[in-house]
Length: 199
Image (cartoon, rainbow, N blue to C red; front, side):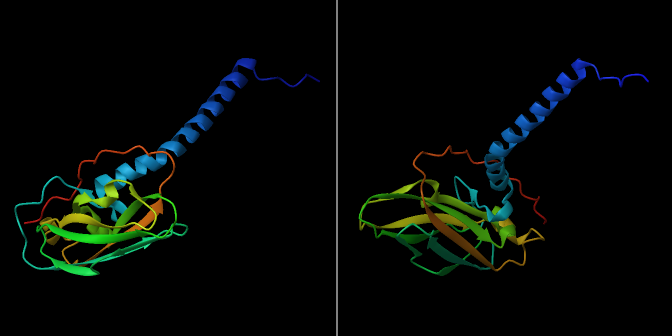
């Protein structure tokens, strides 16, 4: 009886290198997935991610949209965090400003960062911020209270997009989290990806 044949050693080495490469690629993608997901959301408005704009549009659309505001401090952050107005009615295209109050109830300085989203999520791509406290970390001294502004507009194209033309109410929600010790990398605003206007 003949001895079983062995595969050539070169094939085992190549297979091992391939498997190590696949595992290394998967690990690399897992680390890159969060920044890539953030860029995708910023570009498409997916998940209620708002847009960042340099200027308000020159066109104001007829009709009103109610914008509601929601704010909360994450568990473990002993801050009061709330909007000073719970809702306002806005014309699409008009620039608006609202204030949020944050109070540090601790005996030490605390740095925090707000994260946000918009519901319904399909309206996120049409909700544009010109200025926002959420663009930067906020450090409050013990007992300090500060009013922080958001300047925004709802893009008038929301009324001509068949998927959002029925939207009459939008909620802008913030959650304030204790900031990590190291500064996270910031991504520049990604280009917009809106459906073409239907006229």
